[in-house]
Image (cartoon, rainbow, N blue to C red):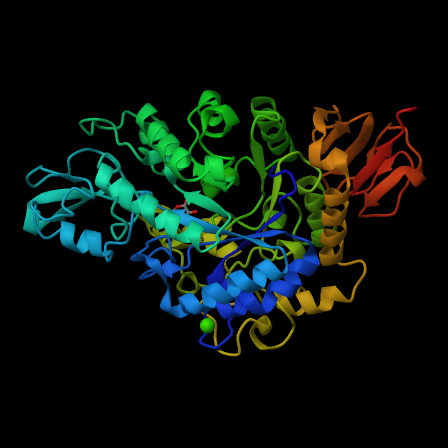
Length: 539
Ligand code: GLC
Ligand code: CA
């Protein structure tokens, strides 16, 4: 039912600025819908566009019913919806419901006293003069913040401007469901549901027994994630709002085990259509070898098969750029961007393209810490210095893992600020925009952009790629290879993720190649070569 979805993630702040204030906006998105239709995608997921003071760039919502001032108005949203309808593009909204902004009216009321109507919408705990337990916020420091008016601490698993909602309160849940219904009534066809594994906090708020992991990241998150009650709340929400209405949902989850993954996504459990497992960037840079990627892919398929949808993504607004992480963003930028595209569009599940990946945008590596905006980056930088790293070392780490790598403005052309805005953007453009931009690639048949178009077209028109079973073909560690089989037809996929040439012994003819990113040389896989081949079945 969702097999043919191809989702394009927009980070609205960085996509296209229509009124030249340096910040992307809804009118900018509207302007680029024809470009996206031409690319071949059929759904957009926008990172949050609700009113927000932007402590965490929109992931701190102060009003779910209105559009962030900088992004435009509700009229702009309605026009965006109309435009998307015209091009048969679905709209997927980001839902942030683990927490709100501390500037949301519920929290402003709640913090005033223990006996106001919203006092139980958040998690407040009595504990004089001392944090209730050892939980740390994902963005550094204690997860508890003291409120004098109530003489209590409130919980914030993310920044202190993102207080956690109390899902044990049925009135609060009902208000959230009404809010979701408001967006369904506006015609939204899907939701990406943010940080959803932490709804139910362990009873009594015990200390997390987890040791600080070697990356120092949010040690209490796995302790809190995915308990029985959280799954019950997710199920209640999905059954109330999505399941019977054919509304697509993708939950961003912290998976604690294989069983936990299945619980979230297998159809019969009535939770999500698909999941995005969250892995901190700092962990990923240690696990980005082709062999790691390969293991993850086949393991996920083994768990889910056709009983749910796998979200195929290598990039998003929380990760370094995929070509920098899994490819080679120097010598083989173009080839490796295309190889990764081939992978995404031939696997079972739903491809998620993150803005800019379709032209091979790579990490930015700004020169000064002041150039970075992301609060996670700044936290990691300062924390590393506190722990004894030199400024240079701390900066290097921040540069590699920064979420701003993926958040620098979209590169539309080679004019000032990459055609994103005529005014200085909220985050600097990547200086490589003169060479890597949409305008230049549209006219170049050999460009990454045109290869994306071909890959998407192939996927949409090939039943093996849409519905086929997946089977791993064992090859060298640096090559990912598999077949997709559907109704006696087989497609073979071979993707090299190394800058070395490798021999291979698959037997097929040049004529059977459906798509490749390099010239064909029998018996040899060129660096970052992808081959997608029709296998003859004799029938
Ligand atoms: C998710 C979002 C991330 C945000 C966090 C808190 O992980 O993807 O960008 O910072 O939740 O809402
Ligand atoms: Ca703007």
